[in-house]
Length: 289
Image (cartoon, rainbow, N blue to C red; front, side, top):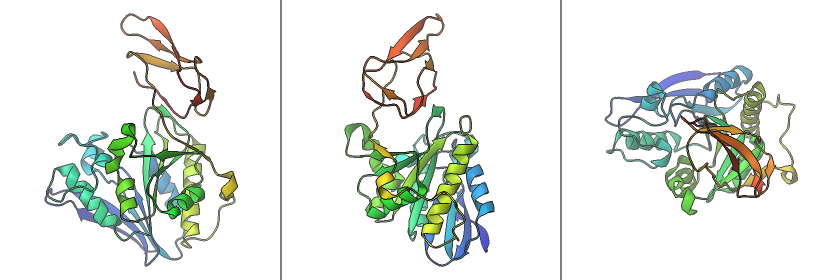
């Protein structure tokens, strides 16, 4: 199994994006890590994936650190221009550091038969989540089916609260007709061994579905009629800042008026009960002070 490490220069910046290429020929599956520099859980997952597969045909291309400046700083965005890389596509070869980075990533992914964009929700309690962005090909749905996340977030860049995603990587790949999905899992502070195994097996199933590896997975994807539930997301926040203490867990069903947690105010140490104004499924809980 041929494994090659190279770097792709980023425009005129003097920086480069590290690439790991396994195998040769087609099909070509690309995996993107580190669009946000502080999301590192996937590096351990990819290390485990590479230990457990033997590529029989095709090319597995892995962008090891898509946002090198933010990665060095362990920040979501580069401090040089403050731009969110996943809100900057398709980028600009003559623009800021983040715009040039976005342009370079698209160049790398141009000939992909499938692209998988990997993220973590740092500071949140979240199930393994697939993301489907409106406007993609039917193959996007099949990629999600093969990966088999716990839930699927259907993202609609046309919605007022989701317009920033009009410049996300997935939206632009959809326009280029490159099949793609994004996957979110817990950050390193909340990721469990089950989360990691779920993600490794999901990537294995995608590679097997492309004929790139032998089927060594006992956990097959569910039939189409047993697919994970699909959701549209609504964000609710506490009225003031403080330390939020959740009384609910991800995937709990909640009803209008339910107590979902308490908020400890600083510096007064007063505690407020937090209720919800929605009847919904609780997808994620953010533990931000």
